[in-house]
Amino acid sequence: MTEEKIKELISNQRNFFKTGKTLNTNFRILALKRLKKAVLSHIDDIHQALENDLKKSAFETDMCETGMLMSEISYMISNLEKFSKKVKKTTDISQFAANSFTVPSPYGTVLIISPWNYPLLLTLEPLVDAIAAGNTAILKPSAYSPATTDVIKTIISECFPEKYIAVVDGGRQENTALLDQHFDMIFFTGSKAVGKVVMESAAKHLTPVVLELGGKSPCIIDKSAKIKLAARRIVFGKYLNLGQTCVAPDYILCHESVKDEFIKEVINEINRQFGSLPLNNSNYGKMINEKHFNRVSSIIDHNKVIFGGQTNIKTLQISPTVMDNVSFNDKIMQEEIFGPVMPIITFNDIREIPELLYPKPKPLAFYIFTENKKISDYLISKCQFGGGCINDVIIHLANSTMGFGGVEESGMGSYHGKAGFDAFSHHKSIVDKKTFFDMPIRYQPYNIIKKSIIKKFLY
Figure 1 (cartoon, one colour):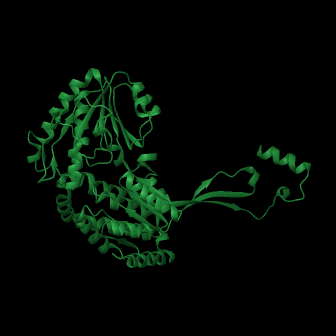
Figure 2: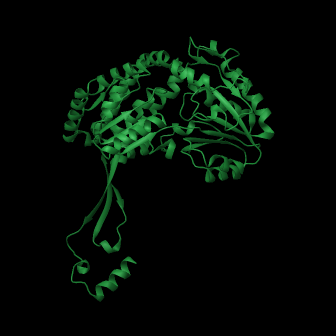
């Protein structure tokens, strides 16, 4: 799409927003219902598209993409009226007589830039929140997942006119053209490097941003953990979507005393979940493209691989891989892995963990496996991260009653449910001052009596 067409699209959306139609909550609810119906009517197309782009199985698509999307839509439809109401606030006696309240207001025309790893969910879930809050929106899906983008374009065109919701297809040129424009808010999911570009572009117009990034999310295995169950849950989360999940456990910090047992159970779980030949498993996915296949392959140190390590460039697959005796100086620890490789680092004292992690970028997710509540409480209070789980991985992002987001290098702002509604809203603070009485104290001339009254009420 040309820059002129993009400018026209934004102008048309601004004009539509000015009509005030999106301010009506019934309008928003009907829009969400149309979106839900359209997604369900294209389930087979979605399955095929995600198989083409990422070799995702239909089950995994239903669990991690359409299922979570349907949950968010249903939650928003059920709660939108409540979220949209004004909220009464306490008014200080010094403001007598008055009532105070906040009222949510949509930003206007927003830009949603989404990644390729969960291309349907991470495009349409932010859109659900944007619609619920009363915005118009332009979607920019990743060029790396073209089949899913085509389905998204079909769904959106069936549901909405372009002046309300539109999709801009394309690659870097279209991204640049979009970021050169003035939006009322930008929502971005992707890498830290591109996040910096988005934030720099937004700064030119002082546009508010929500950045959902990533990072190296640690997974702590305490000596008290139920090792077999921990291995089962970690293997699921680590190798889901071939590790191409922003909240996947990036690496393991395992207590030295249980490392051997943990490795044994991880290998057992890989065999149980994926079979002895994972690359022949029809439900085992692939890397998104050759570029990312080569990047992940290049950071595997085969001298430290104790399980897996097989690759197939023709199918863009890397088998579930485990590396032992890894240090923070190894190549694989210098960047987010975003692939099916599990490095294991050991520790001897839980008090080492905050000191180890403090100098490093704050991760998007943080996982602790322990049966000792004091240890989980200690790590949660001492370590900084976006969100996480105790005795599980990744599931915290599936709860619409909690916000999901990172901190500093792993992002800013959060969404899902009420947090998503708030992310796409500005909450106006209003004082409604009554006219039947007017306190004269604030008006000149000032005197000693007024000064003493001010101190009494305000100090």
